[in-house]
Length: 256
Image 1 (cartoon, one colour):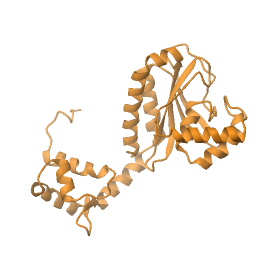
Image 2 (cartoon, rainbow, N blue to C red; image 1 turned 90 degrees about the vertical axis):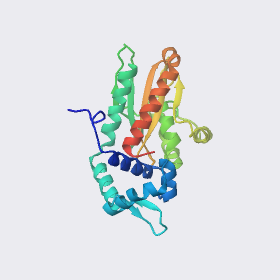
Image 3 (tube, rainbow, N blue to C red; image 1 turned 180 degrees about the vertical axis):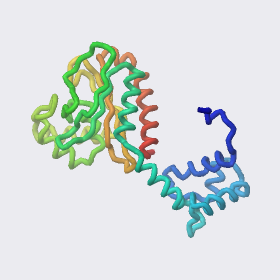
Image 4 (cartoon, one colour; image 1 turned 60 degrees about the horizontal axis):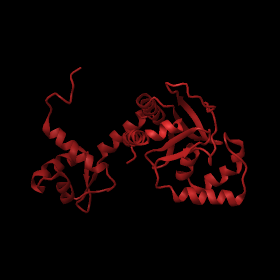
């Protein structure tokens, strides 16, 4: 098949796509001036494009004379969501990270009993772990659990901690210890990557990142683990891969 990136296209369509991409940001509406500034062109040159975009329904002109996404854009977005499978997309990225790093990569979600492993991509080495598909991980003693604790509502984590002793590497602890953990974890919720050394398995270190859905809710956690010495030696390399893949996946799932 011909490589579309190398083939000749219609510049006006490319230009239109650049305009529409501005509406994927956080601002719900944009003025003509804001759009022209972002595009680096004059309002006079830009205006005919906006007229056409409004006419075909890709954009809508508000009562304030600002511009918003139109009905056709919404129809296309809903159509795309119908085809989107968050688990499949996240699973694909987890496998890609595994292939790039050659480290074990685990995919988890929040199940009825807490952080639950739903996929394991094994390492090329002989590294072994007792973690299996279906394992319910400790909230306190695993990066998987810590990551969910950072981004799930406080009441969910508070209730889940009552059963911590029944999870893999979990233990029973007091109300005071639960409160301290919750205070500490919520104070660190700006740290996207969570790192824990020698827990839940001595000699292993793990890194976890959250995967958010379009509603800005945590849906999955991707985790890399490896021998502590090896992983820490390659920490910057691993972090960079995780950030790149996190951004790619978040964009695919509609979260920015």
